[in-house]
Image (cartoon, rainbow, N blue to C red; front, top):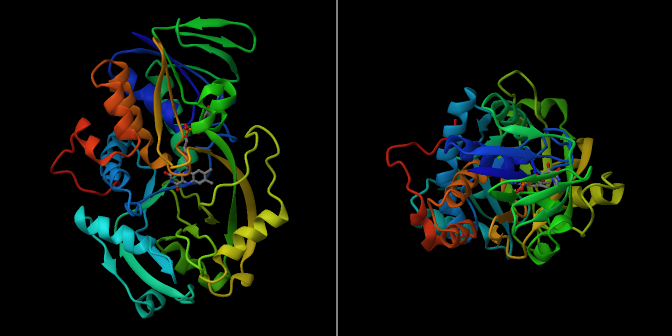
Length: 393
Ligand SMILES: Cc1cc2nc3c(=O)[nH]c(=O)nc-3n(C[C@H](O)[C@H](O)[C@H](O)COP(=O)(O)OP(=O)(O)OC[C@H]3O[C@@H](n4cnc5c(N)ncnc54)[C@H](O)[C@@H]3O)c2cc1C
């Protein structure tokens, strides 16, 4: 069985790995380099964490995700992850922390309620302004995203997956299993899978309603010198509800040191969807966009004006309005996976495994699609090794 995969982000690469393990021939086509710095999967880091508001299906999927990362670390012979723990905060009128905690309790995922005094005692670089609810999970951490995409690409090359870079696919024929490249080359396989992230609707306009390319801005901060060590020991921070003091919310990725001694930065961003834009152009963040992100964190990071903006970047979400991942059969030989919104990276390896099973006829496409859309009652499609720990490290 031969499969062509269009797109070399975490989803395409992970599915290529899983198909190869099933003995399939795989050709992956990427319009840029691997890693492609414009791709959604390519930044210093992405977060993995259990708190998911009231979304039980995705909360449960995180457990599967951790196991799948462990399988990847084993194959790569390296761990590109640092556990940080997860601090969830909510301001007045924001029930996101409460909603998370209720699901975590029911799913028996460890989390500890904290009052404001405990939060500020442990992390004095934070401010307690308007703080209503807080809890801490010992689990959760930073996936070194760009390093993962690079290592996975090298691994696939060594395993005999054909990786075609700097080749743009301009047409997909899901009836015949064909793709046409910009240079007019036509390639054919038993299956074509499109994992083009925020470019999906450019290639498959019929998927535009479930794959909107949304411009997002993230800001890297240099803390004052005396706080550097505290931030290297800090957990990720999520205040992404809609409270009156949260200013529509923000998240914070703490800095860490990678296995090869590289330092990753302190990053803040928001989860509010941005304007629709072309992910291939206009990638510079404006001062207004930077100021808007800083404004959302100002109530929670004490003395934020003492921090220097070291870098600001744009990145693109591939948005489905309800943030439900979309796995579609688009023809007898064609499939697409998109709509990962702002939360897909953590699931990359497990998504690749379940999609590979569906393409190989080992699982139903419909049930796989329901599970990927976060339907909690579809959790039976994969099994959890009972004795495995929840840590990804
Ligand atoms: C600012 C930001 C923060 C995020 N934070 C998190 C987080 O903390 N945790 C988390 O789990 N997720 C997070 N996400 C979401 C996560 O990064 C995405 O869900 C995930 O990376 C999507 O991967 P992908 O493979 O679908 O898309 P991409 O990584 O964009 O890959 C698609 C690839 O397809 C290629 N391509 C497109 N069209 C063509 C074509 N016609 N021909 C050939 N190649 C083509 C592109 O060049 C690209 O490399 C975040 C996203 C952003 C933007």
